Image (cartoon, rainbow, N blue to C red):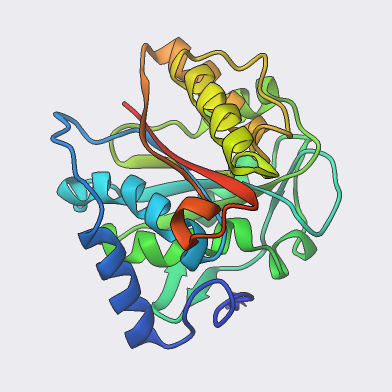
Length: 262
């Protein structure tokens, strides 16, 4: 049995299980819920340290709580920050561990994806990667029992990601989580305008103008947008803030958005 150990516990979020659970529950309590008629199909949520992006991420995860017993599998895509490669990187791990416990990997789905030429096991792309890890404790709190399909995204087009996501789309039991921050290191007023413009593009299902300067997870977002069009779904913004608004440092900020695809 191979377990992927947490890499950023104690840095991006608390390493103590008790403190981590308290932190997430407090963030969720402070987030607004919405009465969705059906379980959301996908989330787009940020991946910075909880002190920065945690309130915005919680706004997205709060929407899942009424459907916590429906989801059984989570497809999780996030950009690679440490390793360069083509396509998507899977992990050889059987479990991903957080301070809240171990999450089983859906090795059957991973095996099917590995039949695609641009999906490969690249453990180095997971060992230090935070863009997937920071979402796992949130999922452990808001979803009852689930497996994960963790994939880091390298050089890959949104069209290819859409094709791969379609292959694992599933039904209501399958949730897709796209990990992405928005603009990076602009002055506060400039970042607000840029991120608001990016949010309009996402809501209008317009993937063409999305670039890495607008969202580091642009390929994953673009793939989801293409499938939202195919499946007749909508994407709504549930929260949009930047690090300056959250921690009170309005210098050069990072933008965070939470979006629901339904």
